[in-house]
Amino acid sequence: MKANGDRANIGWALIFTCWLLASIATLGSLFFSEIMNFSSCVLCWYQRICMYPLVLIFLSGIFPFDKKVLRFSFPLVFVGWMIAVYHNLLYYKILPESIAPCSQGVSCTTVYIEWFGFITIPFLSLAVFSFLLILLTITYRKVD
Image (tube, rainbow, N blue to C red; front, side, top):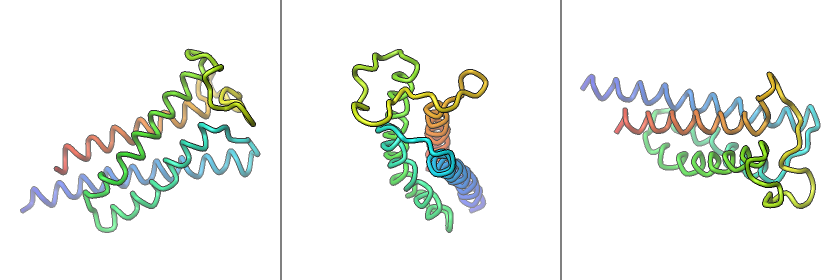
């Protein structure tokens, strides 16, 4: 019986970490748009659509821990990750800007921040979605 309790504790800690990351990412994107007045491109909006609900989904999965949270969060994380990969490929000019969906409004390659020469808003999004994908995969393997 102790093994089940240990798995639940590990699962809880991993999903709590996911919730923390999703919350920080959500607050960060709101800070950039509402406080710093950075306009969001189309791809940023799609990534927000994937990230924002994760805060509530992860929260509902930790009180009490429920492994079903994986079923609801994984598709959003995976789709958000795919969009973030595409966005970074456009941003770093690996893909031509002519195939960008940002035909109106802010360009998907607009530079707002560039910390240490490589940390950009699209990079931050890719990093968070990547960490979430890794944590959800670990959770699935540890809990199931």
